[in-house]
Length: 224
Image (cartoon, rainbow, N blue to C red):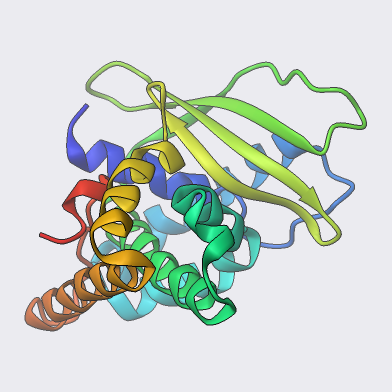
């Protein structure tokens, strides 16, 4: 699978939780309804189609960020070192990782064309608090891409915290390089590494005249 498609599918993990999530709505129904809504917006909004970082960031801020549990995602990606991190370090890690993933979302949204979703049968008990929803992304050229979402039920509704593309969970893809950076330079070193990557991506946006850019989906590419 090419890098563009991987970025696109990772982006859809959060796109599916845009809008007005309801704790009473089944997670698979929520994904289906809101995925279609956001796909339609991305395909018809002229500013998004032109690649406007400002407009796409607005969509991300309003539709995506409130419905993703970034702290849980970050804690699981950091692993055991999270328990030893100070509250300030945890806040910095979560904020910087959120920024990095947001660049992935904005870059992918700008490149939505004629993709669509297929929704596979949902299997979970009525009282489950942590579930997996399976879908696949269909595109005009190429094989469908299997895409699974991991969600947790909170007081404010279902929130996404991980996604699996072709058998690879997003959190797992970051764990190795996060651990390597922590072993080498500590938690502060990991924060600095992600912060440096975010600064480079921000510079790329400015250099492109405000057009959305893509970020790496592999943790090993963070420091490049």
